Image (cartoon, rainbow, N blue to C red; front, side, top):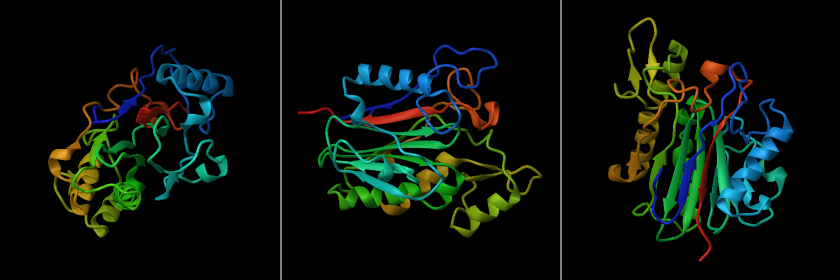
Length: 247
């Protein structure tokens, strides 16, 4: 992902071992992987970014709508529990979220030096965590005029088959577009999560030209990205990171 004034990346798995759902780069600490593997992955990332370990901020996600503002380093681990989006005005700090089919969003206001990341599964998308992240950025001094948003690898609409009860939740929360709800009246409806996130961002006032949709599907590319639908929930996660460099 390319956003002005910052580095924004989503990790690839790298070396994949057949039958090992954690093989490759995995920095997620709460899906059952060995902590030595996790620590090695995090150290490698910090070395590549040129930051200390205390400057890599990764929350414990729970599909909530909670956004935390990273306002100091070191940052308390307790404040990262039950958090699915992060915002900061600090430079040299890497804020990150884990995904394995859900939508990773990166936000940047280069002018006002505010960045954010968010994890948006179907529950977070219905609850508009993208909008909540933008609102938190505005409270930190960002401007709707300048916020740009990019989405990383996630499950595509063709792959994200859901039950009719999930479709009902989207409809109840204002997502009626045929771009969001696919095959609505078929036995197996689908949801396009990136398009739903785009709708939420447009509703709050982000310019359409400032929104970049994902180019890769995690489920279609399990050798490149972790996919819970392919590998199960006991698997690694793709890490999406945003960082602004120190002046």
